[in-house]
Image (tube, rainbow, N blue to C red; front, side):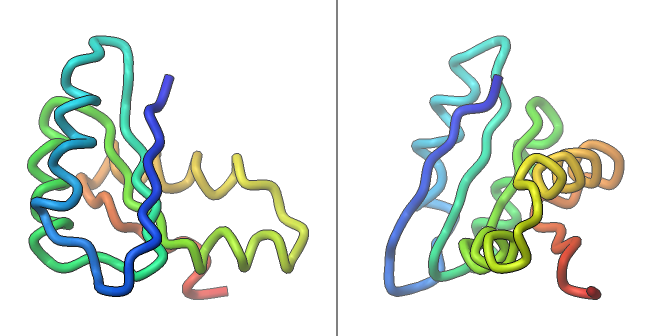
Length: 101
């Protein structure tokens, strides 16, 4: 189970912008978190999500990644599985598996 939140903001999201979502994730024993941003993430948001990975699975997604999947007609679940796997193994919440392809 993953709680998903998306922000359509103009500026990159900060740690304080994603904190309320992380609180919701922490309050659910059986849930991880997926955060989607149209404007990217400030380093403080990445740090906040990295810290959260000590207790929960949390991934940061950029809308551009989803748009690219739709354009290529690729499945969303493959992107999310890759991001979750990387977050779990390397504690990197902002992994960009499509960046090198």
